[in-house]
Image (spheres, rainbow, N blue to C red):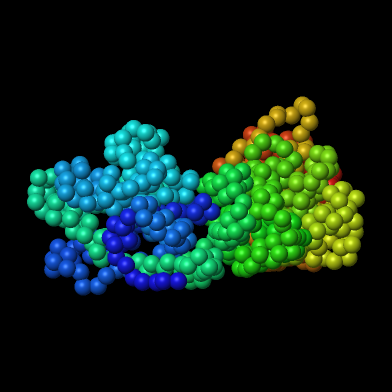
Amino acid sequence: MDAKPLALGKIVSERQRFIVPIYQRTYSWTVKDQLDALFDQIEDKANERLTTGKVQFSHYMGALLLIPESDPVFGKIQNFDVVDGQQRLTTFHLCFAALRDIARDYKFDAIAAQLTDLIVHGDGVPMENKKVERYKLQPSPYDRVLFRDIVDLTWRDLQKKYPDHFFKNGKIRSEAPLPLQAYWFFWEKAEEFITQEGKDKESPEVEKRLLALSTVLFEDFRLIVITLAKDDDAQVIFQTLNSGGKPLAAMDLVRNDIFHRAARANEDQEALLEGHWSVFETPFWKAEQTQGRIKKPRIDFYLAHTLAAEQGKTISLGELYSEYKGFVAGRGFTSAADELSVLKRYVPTYSILVEPTGDSALARLSRRLNVFDMSTAYPAVLVIDGSEAESETKEALFDLIASYVVRRALCHLTPKNYNKVFTDLAAQLRSGGVTIENFRAYFDSKKDADTSRFPSDADLKAAIRTLPQYSWIPQNRLRLILEELEFASRNKFNINGSLQDGLTIEHLLPQEWPEHWPLSDGRSAPRDRTTGIDEDMRAAIVARDALVHTLGNLSLLTPPANTVASNYAFETKRERLKDSLLNMNAIILKEEAWDEGRIGARADYLTSLAVKIWPGV
C-alpha cells in the first residue's frame, strides 16, 4: 500500500482513468450539506491568491483510496478502481466541467483547453475504446449517462436534453439529479465570483478571477492518495477510513461487502446490479426517517426489519452492519445472487407499509400502523405477506395485528415490549406456519403478561366504558379510532365516501360542563366543583368527570363547529352535530338529552362496533 498527498491537478492530469465500481453508491453530495461549504473554501483560497499571489496553506479534502485493475501496460491507459473518495472525485470533475464551460462561454480558450484536459483524454492519447476511455472518470452506472452529457454538452444543450429538470426561466429544479444540481451550482457560483462588482465579459479582471478559481483547484486542493496492492483487503481499509466523521449507511457497507465477495467469486456484477440491487437505487430508499431518537436513511430501517423478519430476533440499529455479517455467516449463501434475492424479497411489502396506496388489507394495516408509529410490527407483517398463505389468511392476520395495537391502546397497556413481541411473533410464524391458529397460539402463551397479552372482548368493553381515552391516547390516533367507528356505524342507507380532513375530537358532555349541564337531580354544580357541595353532589361530580374523556362521550366535528359547540348545552350542540352529516352524530341526535346513562349506552354501542373492526383472537 502506498499513501501520499497529491494536488488535485496532479491526480487528474495524468493519463489514467478512475473507475467507480458498480457496487458504490450513486452521487449523493448536495448543495446544502457539502457543496456550499466547499465553494466557500474554494472562494477563500481564490481571494487569497488574487490578493497575495499565492496560497499559504493547501486545503486537504480527505482520502482517495485506489486499487489498480492491472499493472501498467505500454500504450494503454491504466484504470484504477475508486474504493473510497468517489464523491470528492466526482464533485471536482463536475466543478472542472462548470469552469471549463464558463471559460468557453466567455471565450477564454486557453483556460478552457487546460480544464478540458483534466476531465477527458485528448485525441493524441492511445486508447483501445475511445468512446469510453476518453473520460477520465467513470461514475457508477446510474450516474454515467448524465455525467457524460455534462462533460460533452454545453449548458444550453443540457437544458434542451433535460427540460423536466429546469423551470422556464432556466433555473434548475430542486428535484433534478444531484450531479446536474452540482454542475449548475458550480456554474452559478463561479460566474457570480468572476463577475462581481458588475464586471463585463471583456474585462481582464474576469479572466483573472476565473484563472484564480481554476488554479486554486488545480494546485491548492489536495487529497491523500492511497494506492493498494492487489493483496490488500480493500473492504477492511474502506470501513476503517469511514469509521469516523459522517457515517455511511449500513446498507452502503452491505452493498460493498456483497459485491466484493461477488468479484472474488467471479460472479457477474453487472447482472447482480441490474437484476437485484437496482431496486434500491431510487430516492425512496435514501429518504431520511426517524424511529424513536434514531435517524437513518430508510434503506437502513428496511435492512433492520428484513433481518428481524428473517431471523425472528430483535436487531441492534447501532450495530446493523455487524448484524448483517452475522446473518450471512449463519445462513451460508451459495452465491451473491441468492443473498440479494433474500435482501430484496420484502421490497414490495415494505414500500406499501411506508407509503400505502389503495384499499388492500395491507394498505389499511399500513395506515393504522403509521398513525400509531408502530414500525416495530413490520417484521411480523413482512413474514406474513412474504409467505405462501392464502390471501384470506393474510388479510385476517393483518386485521388481528391492527386489532392488537388498537385494543392495547384503548386498554392503556404499554407498547414498550412491542419490539420483542413482533419479532417473537415473526419467529413463530416462520417456524410454525403463517396461520391464524399459530397466531392464536402465540398470544395464548402471553395471556397472563400485561406487557404482551392480547386484550379480550371483555377487556375492550371495560376500557371503552370506563377509561379516559382523550387524555391518554394521542389525538391523531384517537381520531383514527373514531373515524373507523364512524365507517363501521354506516349501512347502505348512509352517505358513503371518505371523511373530511382536519376533523377534531368533540366532547359531547363538555370538559367544562357545570355552567350549562345540570346534574341528574337538577342541581347545577359550582364552576370550581367544590364550593358549597354536599356528599351526594360530590359523588355525582366525580362520576360525571370520570365519563367526560371516555370514548362514549367523544365524537368528531369540524374545527369551526367544535369551537361553536364548545361548552354549551346539548340543544346548542345538536345543530352542529346535525351539520356534520356523520352517522355517529345522527345516532346521537335521536337522544332527547345527553347524560351519564346515555354515555354508558353509547359506549356499549361503540363496543359492539369495535369488536367487529378490531377482532379478538
